[in-house]
Image (tube, rainbow, N blue to C red):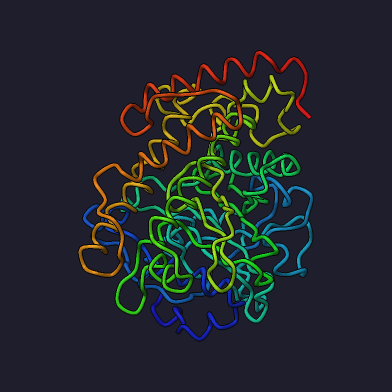
Length: 441
């Protein structure tokens, strides 16, 4: 896509304030971006499309007849998703988004199926990359109330494998439906971004896209969401969000970390994992903090990206929580829903361990390193932190939550002995499943 089709920042002013603020955090508050953007793997990659470099651009979208694509979610009943951008076409056609840097890979397919560019109808769709680069905030020009996220296929070794295979698209939409059907019983401390539809070309089954909607509270400006990485990331005029929160609210750094990242998240993680069998991918990109518009923490979190959600199917079966009927791609259930495709990844112990390991190392450890650095530079005042202090704090709150929720005392420390802690969780899981002879109220 030519550079002239990347617009200036004025286009972003179409968005409501909370979405503008979220996109600022997504693009300019990245934490250690070099860990996830290995430019040496693909020297030819057009770095203008990295979130920190990119302004809004026109998103290529094409009308394709339904017989040429697999459709999941709302697309399958002729409404929702990108169809909300326009009402001009029949239900027999699907609007399919393509990342500009992947457009050349679809050329033969688009030609063979006689796809028509939405731009030929005068439909201008703006997009801005989020921190994941391939996931874009998109909206029709002049209609920001229709904004949603689009997770596209992006072919580049910079980010690892970012193709959207049919199984991944089906998994994302299916697990989003599972979460939606569980909404009434979920902890009030958690909300999520539903993944409402997906499209995969039948001739390119590794090159699909997923549409992710935005909760009304965010669009209406009642809630500002902040990915956890944005608490630590930022430079120059983009101050790390945590420093701004502490300054605005007069809160100490350790109090924020203990109340929000340790106590509140420990309680939520245990309830989701051992009561609902829904095990979050707990890194700084998929977990978002709920804030008031004036940056007061609300003690709640948002979850996004259902591709990474893990499910303890046996626990849910024992509790009487069956999966929704007709989950997408359920003909390949094990490959789509039971495992990530890695060794051991279908086992409950692996799912629990990888979720805790990720949170300990990619959230708590990085937070601790940042606080140590800020303290040394005089940006915050707090007691000296030794290595592992925050993880030990989190472990204490996990143990307290286990005692409060399940009446079980656990002595081992998740920081010093993660494997032993997971074994303790498995024993609790076994015991509580044994008491579930009928569904819990």
